[in-house]
Image 1: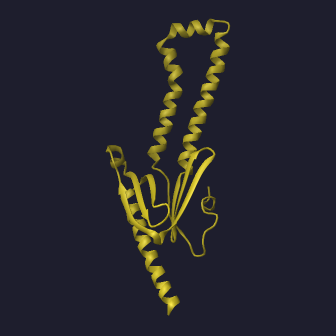
Image 2: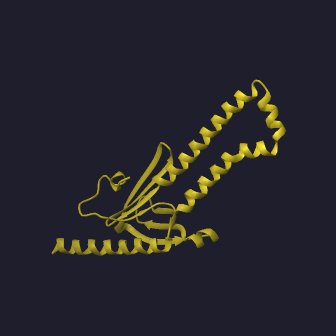
Length: 186
């Protein structure tokens, strides 16, 4: 997917600095969960072999097992697809002049928030737990002086480096705007 799918209206002179998604481990964990749920009928058939034979030998048992199994597999595929879409479409974009928070809540529900980089007041990073620390992912909190006071980049890779990058970009943007204002006055 091209960058223009996320930012169809780049401002003149604006460049994308960071395009962030959740850490790959988050997607892997969700997909592994649904794969394990998908194996549940096979485990039940192994645990209860006699019950499985009894159900399948019944005249209505086999068609019901096929229909139920088909619905179960379709549901698992739907949940796998939903997990991938949620992972892929939750994006945080930092450009030379703004921050965009694009969150996919459901298949057909999306929230997009935008904030000027010069309004950033504080940037912090958090990483809680053994796996987030070992795999270097966590949250980045961006505090702004605006209506939506806080942006949270959730479960992004390298949260400390990301926070430092956003803070330095915000400072550079504020300096740029001060110089531009002074030149406009003078």
